[in-house]
Length: 143
Picture 1 (cartoon, rainbow, N blue to C red):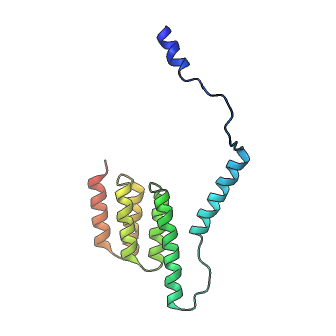
Picture 2: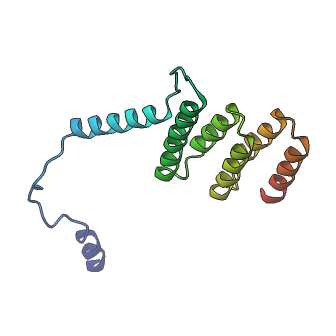
Picture 3: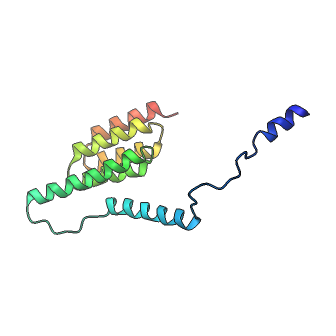
């Protein structure tokens, strides 16, 4: 019985003095909203008119950097990977999109949703053999 009490008492707070810097719930919520706004701004659809190819490439680089930063921050969030791959697909960068799907599979190779999105991408772009290979790999790797 005394052994149980020492284990229970060991979880008590020893230092009850207030911290030097107090954070309110309002501050926490404000910081969370600011972080969401930053993420939304990085992922926002670019609606600027592009005047030349150099400016277009510059905007692509900026969007790619935003996606890569978000992936570095939340590597396990598969939705970001899929959005990034769809962005590349919409810009007719199919090799890049395929590379993004492959990188995402390194993170979560057990996610059936990701395998299906990857196969759908291949079929949408009329790479039937690639889609077949992706589905074969999925069937072999999933339980």
